[in-house]
Length: 170
View (cartoon, rainbow, N blue to C red):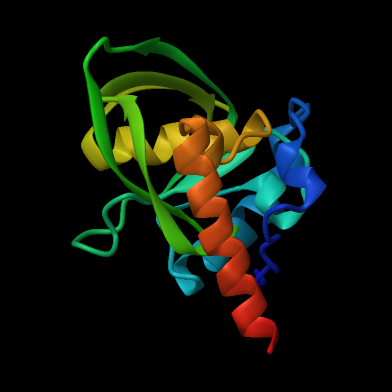
């Protein structure tokens, strides 16, 4: 296992749709590295394109900072159902450090994915798990949480992020 460098937005790879994974064995090492990287960062989720691997894989552990570790590796995930109920809350991103955005998400989702054993899983997620899964799933389609905002809110947060980035270069 090794720590992976996390790409920073606006790296163009963060705007690209990822390819399906053909074999679980092909991404087993990547999954281990993604877990090591999120726990070190520290984050709650990390998608493969955030480290430059353009495949449909993300890892998440929504509760480890507050309690027990519940790691979940999602290979070729699909959101198969989403509730009509929406929630709005702050989201940060390891690829856009230093700023958070108030993002509207589905309160509950059903997520189908292949796990590391090659088995297809389908789980109902709510709360932080649903939010993290939707955020990471967006990365696989080339979206960042800024893309979920109204134009004015997005512009303000982009300006904040650019100001932070310039400040760290001085």
